[in-house]
Structure formats: structure tokens, C-alpha cells
Image (cartoon, rainbow, N blue to C red; front, side, top):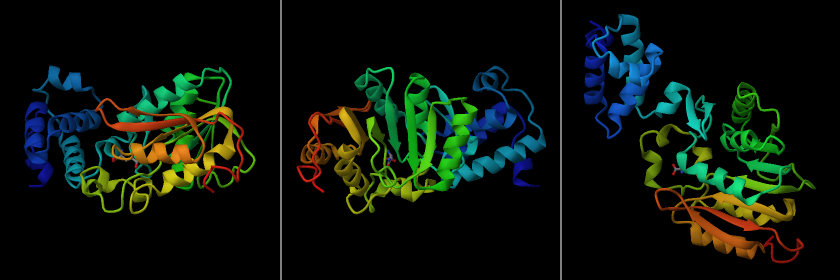
Length: 294
Ligand code: GLN
């Protein structure tokens, strides 16, 4: 008997067996999301008809997904999508899974820039989640997402097409390299910011995400240092820089922003109460040889 044939055959029994097998705090939710995905149904439909029989082919698909989940793959990769800012973002494993706390970056960006028309840059765009959320909220903004990974760019472009957003473009780029002479009203970034030896990198889900999207040097600040140091040369007068960062990096970020000559520096906490996004405004004339730290 194959492992899939050994699984019980009703929705209710399959879910109970899957929970026992996954044995993680989120086991029930994961088991439901994956079974609904296999059956092309909703979680509500699973609740409504737990006695429904599941055929052998669907049980085999479910078994395969549970095995991948047990091996640490994020549920969002198994489903091939993740909701972010009410948009369905398609994923293929080449980028980070968009996190709920990153919605704070979107919220603050929308609140900071009042202009209907604005030039916006999203650095390290990955799946394009942040750029797409901003473009969907502000149809007259022009949003550019850059990423150094061609696979991420393909995914971001496919997401823009699926969401029918035509005010967003994606281009290859290593932070600001390739953007010489270009200035924006708003620059946002959720760059890698995890320290090389951070034990969180071994956590289920995270362990299967691309390391280059998570890790930035010994203290996790390499990418943020580069972005904050170079940003003012790419901001219009009055323009804003908003960066997501780790919970323990707020003070380091405020110091970086101050050294780079930003005004209106402030850090905002996410819903879990962790310092998560630091912002600054390019309020005075920018002099490259001045306090920008280059
Ligand atoms: N917040 C993510 C984590 O801790 C890291 C995201 C990032 O490096 N940009 O898993």
C-alpha cells in the first residue's frame, strides 16, 4: 500500500491525520490550506462537509504536499501564492514570501507621500509585492522595482501582468547601481537584514527561502548601510526613504539616517510591537561630499 492509500479517505479524517503528522503550532491551518488547495475548494467548504470522500489521486497529491511541508517548505510556496495588501501575489520559490509586517512599509509610504503623481522606487523588489501594492493604491504614481535576481524580476513582471497594473516597471539592478542621475520622490526597501549566524535562518519556512534575500553580512546591516548611504543622491528635495529592518536594528538605522543627513527620522513598530520601519526625509540640499558618509 502506498503512503497516500494509507491515508484515511474523508476530509475530516484526512485533516486529523495531517495535523498529527505535521505536529507544529500551525498544523491545523496548514493542513486545511493545503487540502483546500488540492480539492480546489475553500476552507469553509471543508468545515461544511467533513464526511466528503477524497479520491486516491487527490490523496496522493495531498500526501506529497504534506511531505514537502514537513521538510520545511513554506505553505505559500506549496500554494504558489500569498496574499499581500489584499493582492494575490504568485510565488515560485525564487523570492521571499511577503510578510504581513511588510504591509506597515506600504501603509507608511502611502501616508508620507500625499502627491497624486510621484516617482517611486522599490529596492530589492523580489516578487514585486511592495511595488504592486503601491501601484494598485496610487494609479498615477510611477513605480519602479529593481532586483539583482533575474528569476525575481520574471516573477514580479508576471505578477504585474496578472494584476493588470500598468504603472509599475521592473528592471535589473544592484540597489542604486544602474540608476545614476535618477531621482525619486519615495524610495522603499525591504532588503535582506538577517545576520549570517542568526538561528532564525534554520526555522521551518525560512530555511527554504533564498538566502540572498534574507542575509546581509555579519550584523545583517550590509544592504541597509549601502541603501541609506546612497539614497539621498536619488531623492528629490522633500523625498522620503523608508526601510524595513530587524526588530533590534532600529537604533542602528536611526544613526545611519542621521549620518546620511536625513531629517524627520523616526522608527515605527509593527503590530507585534517590534521596531520595523525607519523613515527619513531628504529635506535640505544634498552635497555628496557632506554628511552622506560616502
Ligand atoms: N522578516 C524576515 C525574517 O525575519 C526577514 C526579511 C528580510 O530579510 N527582509 O524572516
